[in-house]
Length: 266
Image (cartoon, rainbow, N blue to C red; front, side, top):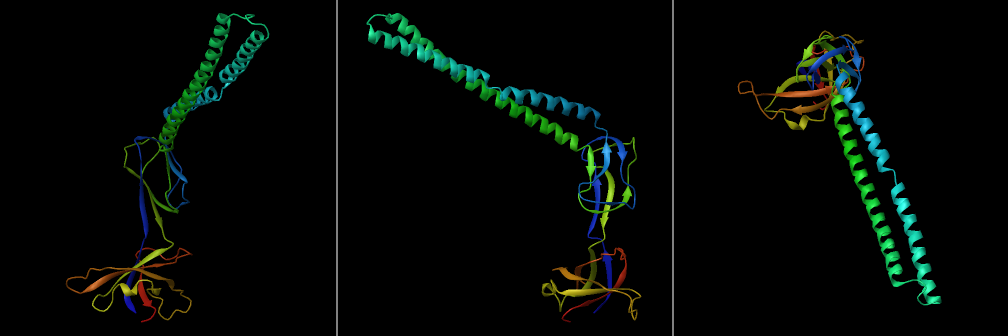
């Protein structure tokens, strides 16, 4: 048993503004429970939203252009017709020599060659259009990323304990705007005799009894496991820091609460 232990927060996060801007709206208040991805603060995004709409429209136009294969289909159809004309002229000469002059045959062959090149050109133009569409799509994604940064969301599930900004306030990048804490699970901290105990304690089950619960059968201990034993010893006492993670589903236990712990196997 360790008589002096204390609870502390595992998750205690100040969420900072990723970009500079004017706070348009604060969507949370102290005491609110937020989930991962929930928007807490909205920065003014009117200008970047307009840029995004323009980028999306530009991409849509490029996408339509890239999907338009009319020129390719027309060039292929033209080639079929020119080849048929050439073959008919050659067949006519086989049936009656000299019916079609060599010059005319050469001109028809040139037209066929031009039609083949027209297909290549149409395919090339279509590939360029698709590349431009991809470029426009990437540009739209960049603007979308900028737009997303105007909404400051919760990176973890937790409780809002501090809101540091107000609507209309200008914030710089890195300015803390909201502080979140998580109390389930919660950490138990204490010290053990570093001469006798070490990493072999990691993984052992523990029970944390809040201070004042001695003899109180209704007091339920918090149950968990040891997660860390410091490899460093205090130079005077020879003690090592120990951490354990315990469940706190009813969220009644708070950081700073003192108590004792019992370690299984001792």
